[in-house]
Image (tube, rainbow, N blue to C red; front, top):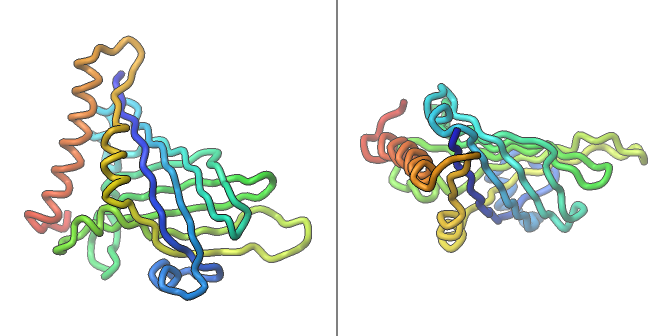
Length: 202
């Protein structure tokens, strides 16, 4: 079994009491948020062959205003999941979901990148619409909070992400690990070309 793992960093802004990521990002009350994600596919041949390719996600989220650093207990990354896009029409999505913990505080996070025919593939594939919901029971009786906004990969962080892509697998050879990375990259690029070059809603 040969898999692929890589890391990515996204930064942006979210606003409390918001459930609309676009409105939350634009709000004057929005505050900084960053997320570092580590993604691991397991067997890459099985990953690209699934109806919804799903990988393991480990995330670290930093929001100083609401308590600092939250770390995921478990999470998933889904690539090219089908569903309604921002305009309500069929789209493919990259979906990051996780539950994150800071001491006794727990947050449910969902971040979605919407991929559908447009003239801005870079923006679509590097911008995640994120919603956060506190799911812990507060000892002080305070109501759980929610927040929403946008987080993005900068060109610099994208280049760094490319350098983190590695094949792995016990007993695998260098050629097998290299082939795993190329298999993942080919699958990802073909999906983008189908959406943005062929302009197909698939």
